[in-house]
Length: 147
Image (cartoon, rainbow, N blue to C red; front, side):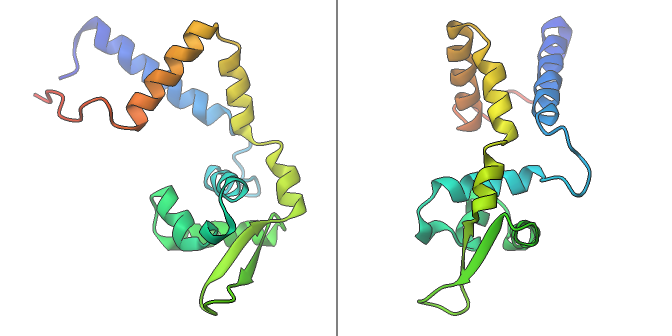
């Protein structure tokens, strides 16, 4: 159960983390590249071609295909990605970054976040990385007393 001064400090820290993440995406208007779209572009830049299909992207994002398909359609309209029908299955399309998409990815807001973390001391950077990995990989028990 959350109570006491330390818990307030913990909650405040989580709120600051949420703000930190939100602030790296300064443009919030509908014509801006949205966080999911950035994430899809990052995925496409790093994955082998055979994994650049909606089903793999959706699985990686932990989403259904519908929101991923909509995000890709928006990126395609903006000429940041292109889709090609697969040679093996006409129902499947592979997605790739365009030259414009690659150039746009050089302004990825995540790079700004990384620069902010790099401004910390090496010890603080290492602790940040360990803590985030532990939280993201569920190394901290989800069975913490919830009474």
